[in-house]
Structure formats: C-alpha cells, structure tokens
Length: 333
Image (spheres, rainbow, N blue to C red):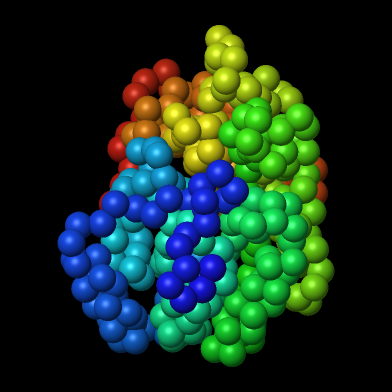
C-alpha cells in the first residue's frame, strides 16, 4: 500500500479513513508537523509517548474517537482523542506525567506511515512508542506476518535514529467478528480465539526479529479473556447475552466504547506497570463514556488478569468507591 494505491478493502484489514472537511485537515497536519520541531526535547519534563496506528488507535465507530482530543497532540491535526486520550486520562488519574502524541490514518499499516510520515515521526526523540499494523496483518494475505515483520524493523530503525533508548511496544489487536462469523471472512469456520492467536503470533514474530522491543501488548488476548470470563459476548451476530458487553461496534469490526476502554486499560498497564484496577470502579473516563461502575470494574479486572498472567504488573487494586456518581475527569492540560 504505497504511492497512489487505494487503501486495502475493509473486508481484509483496511480500516476506513476518517471523514475529512475540505482541505482543513491537510493544512492542520502541515501546521502540526511544523510546530513539532518547536516542542521541547524528550526528557525535558513529562515523558513523551507516541501512538502510531490506524482506526484501531483513533477509535473508529465509538464515542472514544474524539474523546478529550484537547489533552493529546494529533500530529495530523485531525482532532482525534481515541486510545491516546484514554491513556492520558488514566495516567493523569494515576499521578503520572505523560505528553501524549498520535499519528494515525485509516486503512493502513506501518508501511504507509513509513512512506508518508517518516519526516514527522523521525523529527524528534520519543521516550516511548506504541504501534500496530493492519488488523489482519496483511490486507492481501490475511494472517501472513511478513509485512509486519519488515515494517516493524524499519520503523524501529527510524525511531532509534533519534533516540536509541526509545521504548517501543507492539500492540497485538483484537479478533474481528466479521472476519470470523461472516462467510467472506479469512477466519470463517474457526473459533474467535483463532484470529486472536494468529495476530498475537504475528506480533511476537515481529518482536523476535527486531531485538530490544518491549513485550507485546496483549489486547487481543484480553478480549478473549473477557469473553471466557463472562464479561463480554463472543458472538454479536446471535445477540448479546444479558449482563455481558459487546466489545465490537455496529460493524463487528471496530471496537465499541467497551472494547476501546479495555484496549486502553491493557496499554496503561503495559506501559506504566500499574495495576489497571488501581484506577478504581469510579474511573472518570469510564463514567464520561457511559460505563457503569460494575462494567468499569469488570474490564479493569480482565486487563489486570491478562497482564498478571505474564507477570507484567503487580497487584494493587483500589478499594470500591462510594455509591455515588464519579467525578468528571480533571483537565489534563
């Protein structure tokens, strides 16, 4: 997917691009890139973290898409909050200081970012980077990790050229219901766990081929754990069971607010080493997105259990909050 080629078909990993308003987003993107050069260098205060991804990072199909966009810096100037804004909210609540940036584009893998955004991504030294490719690993060859392996290596070289000590984490994305239950899906006829396992294996292969990367962030495995533990329904096509959440949005492809919230909790724990349960059942972003205390607590528990299984966090649960409305999130900037 280079040059003037179209984004890959949505059926096989292409994430639809965001709606655009005339030429404003292009102008805003140029301004963001120019302003980036004037920002303080990493290490001058708050730790910098950059998210590189597609619609699975900017939270297509949910209220998370534009959530608290003013608290993060969108290097493309498109007003996205997404997963990065949830991470910012969680870390602010935890008393941690991060400057959060994102560079996202729908329907693409890391190869597109390398071709079109290297000048922006390589313009400063980042302390930490979280990145992922297409949801099917390769749009034309679903399940084949070769493209991911190659582009992770090249992106790492770009990022390390400015900061050899940058912490880079790959995010293994979730299994798609449309790819599993629909006849046209590349994983049709297999259980939902199969796609999650194949995607995770692809990211592990990419990590192994590029020495020095941090452990893979197990978002897809956390989704499967939520299904196995009774928190989430595994098949949205046959209805959502009472008392369970649907991690997918209406297209059974992208995540719902529940799904992105779980994604962000796993990222939070992976990057900071903090127990996601330490945020408490009154966590403010969950409240602002319409999650109940019970749903917040259940998703925090799933994220903790997934990370604890790999000894990635130490237990530090918060006590249940008072039976009242949580407060709004504090201003993070």
